Image (cartoon, rainbow, N blue to C red; front, side, top):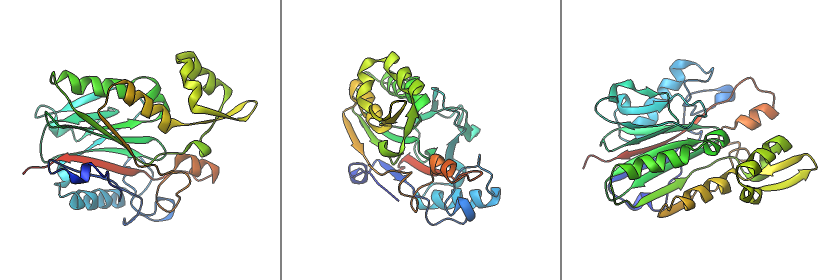
Amino acid sequence: MYFSKKFKQLDDIKHCFFSRDNGVSDGIYSSLNCGLGSNDKKENVLKNLKSVSRQMNIDENKLMLMNQTHGNKVILVDKNNIKIKKFNYEALITKMKGIGISVLTADCVPILLYEELNKVVGCIHAGWKGAFNGIIENTINQITALSENNIINAVIGPCIGKENYEVGEDFYKKFLDQNYENRLFFTTSTKVKYFFDLRGYINLKLKKLNVNYIENISLDTYHEKSNFFSYRRSIYRKEKDYGRCISIISLTTV
């Protein structure tokens, strides 16, 4: 379990970036796999989700999940859609107390948000596609649209590190075509291979959006094999599937 230094000091919210520890799944999913989209036994995943809900002191029926497709859509969770339970979106925001909004990751970036003036929390699943196509901008813009004045805090959780994120030349050129400034997030591996700093790319986006406070939990999910699931590591090992870690934020009821 990993926590933001700032968020832990606030009484209005609860949060956690969960590791892969202390669950009931086994094999390649050992042990706290929270991905219902994986090929793990469903009953094990449900037990794991029940466990994290209990640790967050949230009713398991009030833990909101996403069916993540690397898109750029964000939704406000409110009384009109609260019964959906699993949203086909890449980011959730809410002003409702007592519910947990969550993001699942296995190398992609989990971002937890708290807008402290108007008591809004948010979570973002930011893989390279979502980040490239505007999920971070869309989420911050939707939060600021709720009220004229805002103080937004963002915590960027564990994700794949630059030294383990090798990409091809087409990927590199795609980012340079978007903005030549993006060259700062690449170093050369070979003439046709590069290492990409996804965390750095996302940090710059948040800074450009005038987010007031940005904190990083700078752990590499690929390297920390005993603590996190990793899509890329599963590919390297030629495993058939991989687990997902969960990150959760909630507005407290007191």
